[in-house]
Length: 279
Ligand code: AG3
Image (cartoon, rainbow, N blue to C red):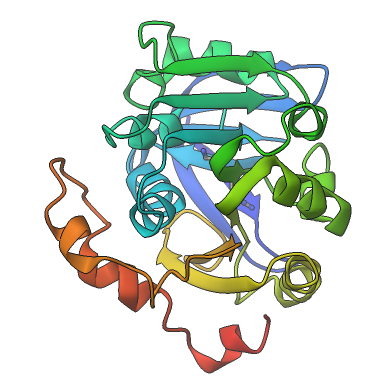
C-alpha cells in the first residue's frame, strides 16, 4: 500500500510526499504532533498538519534564522530562541564560540521530547549535554516579560500565525521583545512566504516597524515550505544587516555552513519587487 502525506498550501495547491511509516502521532496540550519517515526528505515533523522540518532541507531554515543576526551583531553573548523545540536553531547558535548562553523557550514539552528521541541530528545540543544551553518549557511571551534588557539576540522560531503561535506576530509581543533586548539587540523571526502570505506579512512588518527603528526582510529557498520562497524578518535597535555587516568576519568563520555564506548574507536581503511590496 502506498502512503502519501499532503500539506495544503492554499485551497487548491499542496505539497505531497511519499511516506514509509509513522514514527509518532499524538496530541499535546497545544497541538497535534506527527513525525513521519518520508522517502525523499528523510524524517519530517508536522505540527497541526504543517511541515515544520525535514531532515533533508532543515539546514536552510536553521542556517538562515541564525547566522545573519549572529554575524551582524559584533559580539553576541546571550541568545534566546522562542519556539524551536526541534533544537535545530540552538545547534547553529552553538557553532558561535562567543555565545556564552543560549536559552530555548518552547511552549510544548512534547516537541522537545520527541525531537530528542526521533530527530537526533537537530536536537543534539538540547539533550542536556551542553552547559551553554538552558531549556525552559514555558510560554515565550511570559518568559520575556520576566527577562527585560537581557538578550543580545532573540530568534522567534515559530509555526504559522494560527494556533499557539498567533500572539508571536502581534505588536504587543514585539514591544516585549524590544524591551527584553539590550540597547543594541537584534530580533529575527520567521516571516512566512512572500508569495502566498502577503497579507500576513503586511500586518507583521507593519507591527515590527512601529516598534523597531531598523526592519528588513530577507529570503531563503526552502523546498518543503509553501512556494519554496520563505522569508525572515530582521528587526534591530542599532545594527543594520547590510551596512553594518563585517563580511571578513563571516568569511573567516571556523565552522561549516551548507547554505549560509558571506556573499549570500548580502544577497538574501535583495528582494524581488513583489516581496518588497509586502513590507
Ligand atoms: N518553523 C516553521 C515555519 C512554518 C512552516 N509553515 C508551513 N509549513 N505552512 C519551523 C521550525 C523549525 N525549527
